[in-house]
Image 1 (cartoon, helix red, strand yellow):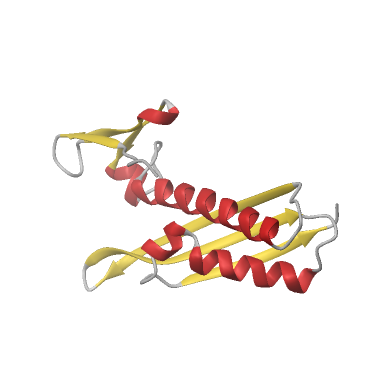
Image 2 (cartoon, helix red, strand yellow):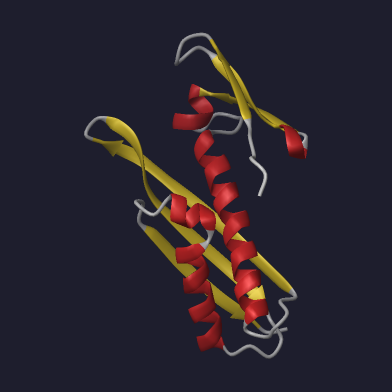
Length: 143
């Protein structure tokens, strides 16, 4: 796999400054500020991008697992929620919740749960974030 990158520029101090994050390969760029990260201000933030990366990685890993099991998913939708709290006075990512639903014709619910749990543990982003508690809610939808 080729190296992947994103860029960020920050100008000014922490609370009054502002920045832009850029994902060149996708042509995506967005602003971020203290308010967008630690309050409810407009813009994006690193935790949101981390959640997007995890949701995408998990969905692909689950599709791979389903395929290896002999099935073809019609659709996999994943929402990742990253929680950050102060721990010993420092902002820390303290948890990730993956909520996924999928349509996989012919796959039994128990097997789907097994494949989803494996994807949660083994997708590359999950492995990179292994020190963070992760929860998974996986639902197999009827086709």
